[in-house]
Image (cartoon, rainbow, N blue to C red; front, top):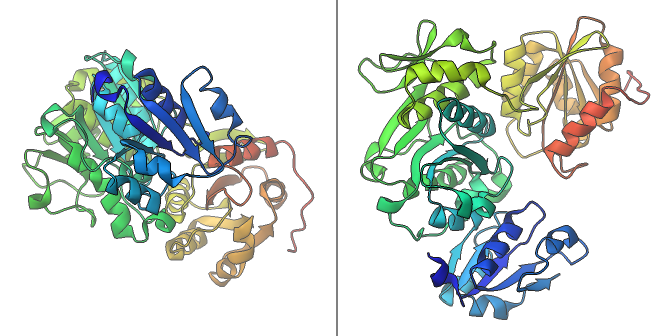
Length: 469
């Protein structure tokens, strides 16, 4: 959709939000001459920082409510990913002829560069970081964005045709992509779709794991012929081969088993990350990584190779890889204890991976707002690998009996600060402490990052704790 195609069109941005996507969409449309209305159920005071970012642009605001007339008259409706895709007003706009899209949809319509999209339940941010660093280390011009930090729509006009874009996409973003991206498959900017995994999460939005997987797999619909799909081999959510769009190449990665002979697949070889019979890079070219991060790196190496990076270049790029904070980060020794920060964990699965990576004897800090997810593996692995668990937040109320019934020494704390204090009082020098909440942060924090920041502050300052509780 060209700049001229947007000029004079009635465009509604549904959900301004405070994370940049709504602002980027409104600014993009207004600068192209669209008649922009921004509407959000939150009021002007709540959205003041975002509203200020649109000062000077010809944008009409409807805040604290939605007006049905705006949706009836819209020719283009840009939906914030936080808005469920089937709310009545969206369906109403569609029935009145509006094209329904999102900030990511606008970006894919207009970007000039080549895009590698990454999604999954766990590991997508780390994999994006690995892939971006590998590509940069191989001499490519790279941009990184999407769900990992910033909406790239704000930069779309600056992206040159020879640039590579690593784009992290959440299930919410994929679910709100348009039914038909304006570009044909032949013109699509996507060359890579990388899926790390699909586990149970966000079921309050998607309903079932199958529906959650279907939202992730929408990415396949946007791939042109010749694009490469990198995903875990033999996963139970993979579509049948004959259900894939025509002309796609698949590059499965085998994390825990050998690939069949002759298969174009990724696996761990004898001392190397390998694609088929080709050694992509030596295993010892990076500092020791947890098993799940090695899997993420294997997938990223395969994607980089599919984009043209030769093994010799990849091996040179590996030492410069940067990890992301809060992904089983080793914080070193704090008051004699080895402290690990896995604050990104908001599901039981991610805490299970962290506990397995650390071995036995860890004191695990787990808590927050409980999700309606299976905890049986979390209980089993905590009982096997942790010396004790300290539950905080809502989890301290709902999971305490469950953990103790599993034979786990379990203590309850009202909040993160008290839990950290407890961890130091219940351990001694040489012990390990793992902060891996396994729950969402929304009982006490706006997001996982705010909870992580509080954890770091609490490593120095705590409150009194009664170990008898």
